[in-house]
Image (cartoon, rainbow, N blue to C red; front, side, top):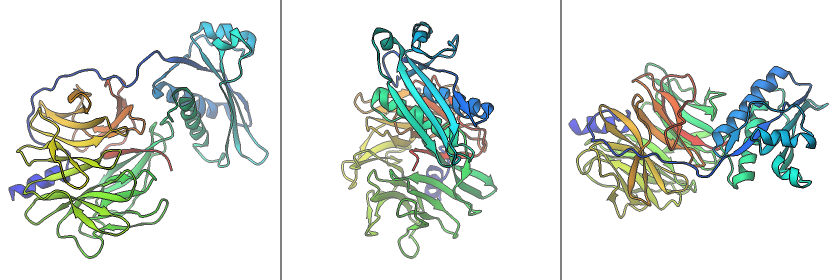
Length: 438
């Protein structure tokens, strides 16, 4: 019975019990170098309310660029003119890239945003061409959020133009939200906290979302009584039962995790003795391979980007710790050495870091383990318990839940812990996963 209780605590609930000594706290920077000053001029508007442009375009784009990382958004003392003669005045404000916009609605009702970005410093020395000149069109321009989506896309494109790396303004976060006693569903929200909406409505316990690289969803649901893993076999396809492939599983199943290529699904399967092990479901054949086979709790599988290793939580050496193993279950080794309770590993998209939570002074904080250094760095301090970390696709930020039991909310932070932001005013949030839009 004691083993079963430990299993339920590890698998179903946020990490609750244990003590851990303090880990060293070191500031971890997400980017280096000076930021590029960018400013938005007042858009030219035709056929679109000015208030809508201010709220859904200017405000959104300014915030997206500020949170992207390499940009410093210039907001004060901006010149009114945008012709070449005004470039020295723009440069004097610290602006390097000047973004001008023309927003209108076509005869067919499409929303059109024409932008031009000029390097005002280079343009003073020579007749420089625009850094970016592009027309954005939304055929659903009459729908709420169309202008916001264009603003997100512009930010991502400017990020790609500057760094070669696509931005994350257009990304989304999938999470669990409690809707009443015994009811939880999978929800989705834009990266900036807008457009929160449910993805499931089973009026039962539906938890543990996982999102494949191609956008397919997987999750655990009790809608049929016993827990089953449901999700999509093809992108945009219907939601069907994925596990157990046929009949009923020997024990409970939890924590699905897509492999990077989307061909395998790691998951946790329990037995009647209260132990849990990690298995891998081959999506095409339905074959199930067991990766761990020990008389303990193994849970929280997380793939590395190459798909040949997994991080996971196990209490095989006493208290829960983060371990690594090959995708065939070989070469098991312990990662976390400090603290008596570490868990919920999340392998970073580039593969060089693993985020996890560690219990210290009665609550959990976020840590990041840098594999190249063999060291852990503390990310959050001074918050209520921080749990369930997940990486942004560009590896610059982490989404997690924080708050009191029952009042957990979604937060994001950079890797220094200095730009903490509450994502949305919704309570009862759990298990976020950050994904690109599909």
